[in-house]
Each structure stands twice: as structure tokens, then as C-alpha cells.
Length: 132
Image 1: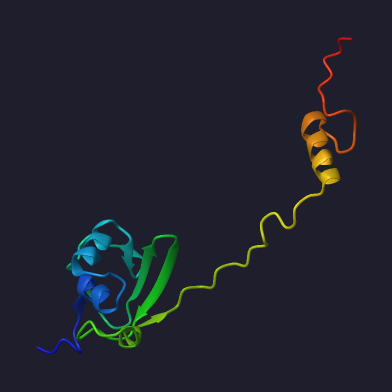
Image 2 (image 1 turned 90 degrees about the vertical axis):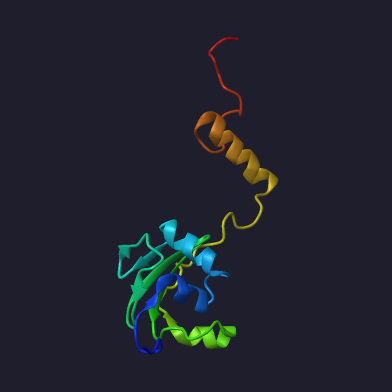
């Protein structure tokens, strides 16, 4: 039986493709529910993947979508591992820079006035209880 044409265990494929440093780590990744095959959540590291399957991996702070192009034969260098899959992850949305530039002293006073009174540049930054 040739491993090059047939299906392969998901934990072994993740290890060959260098998404896990060890096979045990790959098994834990699958058992934690961080791997989906063709949109189906899997919980068995012995699940077989075939050429054409689409894997969804949740790794730390990112989600990767991969199409399996070939089963692995060995855990080789990174360029060899990248030939096993095609990354079809949609590009991350472009977010504007948070905060922009620092507010000036006048801007900070306007922000404080807005927070304390409800309107910018209106009234004093102190609450008025109606007592004198």
C-alpha cells in the first residue's frame, strides 16, 4: 500500500505539514476541537484526510483554511511541507489604526467635559447638584 496516493491520518498530516511540532501536539490539537475537515468538527486524530479536503485550523489568534494537495511522505523542511497544502484563508479585514494621534490638551478637556456634562465644550466639568 502506497501512502502517496491514499488517505492519511489527520495528526500525521498536520505533523508532516509542520502545523504541529510533534505528533502528540497534533493529536491534542485535534482532540481540543481546533480542527475541522470539510466544515465538520472532528475529535479523532485517526480521522483520514484525502487530497481535496478542506481543513480549518484554529491556531492561537488566527484561523487558517487549507486545501490538502498531497499526503505527506516525511517531515521535511518548510518549503517541502508547503507543497502539501494550499492556503485559502481569506485576507484579514483592514482595520483603521486604533486611536490615531494623541489628543491635544484642548481635546482632552473637551472629552472630559463631554463625559461629565454630556456635551462637548458645554458647562463645567463638574456635576451640578442644584445646591449653592
